Length: 101
Image 1 (cartoon, one colour):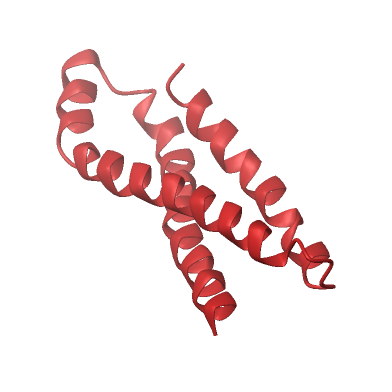
Image 2 (cartoon, one colour; image 1 turned 90 degrees about the horizontal axis):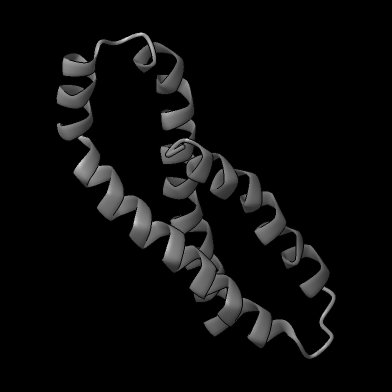
């Protein structure tokens, strides 16, 4: 039961992580055409919430994955199915960091 709870938490926190990253990726080409005043006005409106939710989801996802790896380290076959998840989240992290450049 404990393993199911941690799996659910990891999946539940992964969803906002990927959706917020995808949202930023879709918005970026349009926002690059904005003037300076409009860009700064748009940046300050919804993005504080993106930062709080996104930071919690990113850190929570990584923490859940660490706990899952600790719970699954005893050689269970499911460990090999869980192992690719951090690598699948790596492009989301990289694209999120590149959007700040």
